[in-house]
Length: 244
Image 1 (cartoon, rainbow, N blue to C red):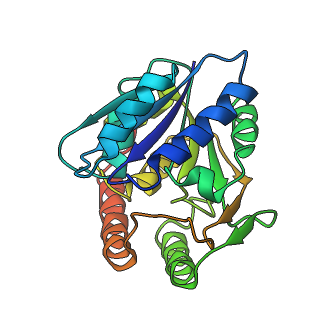
Image 2 (cartoon, one colour):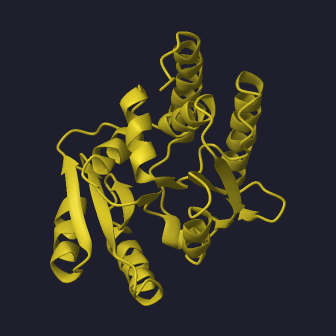
């Protein structure tokens, strides 16, 4: 079983179209593979959950999980992961079908046959990325900070919202995780590297420079949160919290 986990929070504007796009792709490309789409409601206060339930009624391989109070992307992924029992888990941000060629999913599944963690990277030489300039600047600063604080990590795009895992290992790492929001992405890779897990990056295209692009990211608020999270991860690592 392959689980495709999609966290959502107040995404009523683009939830329906993006989920339908993903579902259509998987239905046609994974005809012989058992899979499901898991939508995790991270405490939405708009019509997102209502729309998700409507989709659940019309898409056989779709399941909803979640909770009433917003907790952050990391918590959403951990919560959804605990409800899964298959072999692989791929998570992507809800805007993934808007920004990226979905055929990267097939490449990720192929790489998961020989790697324990696969990261979709916007910053490899072969990647094709179109970013809005404020997000580009914040992204450059973030990657420089990660490289400075964790020079041994060796991952060019740690916070990309497209990653694949062997499910049993992800559950094991989530037991050690202490971050619930954006910093979870970096933390889970630090845990993986600390314990010698096999990781690889694959190039992806990423285009957020179009009129339909919708994101719940707030650059200053979330950038500051990620910086604080990075320092906390460093402290947790020094205290030995991340070893199996």
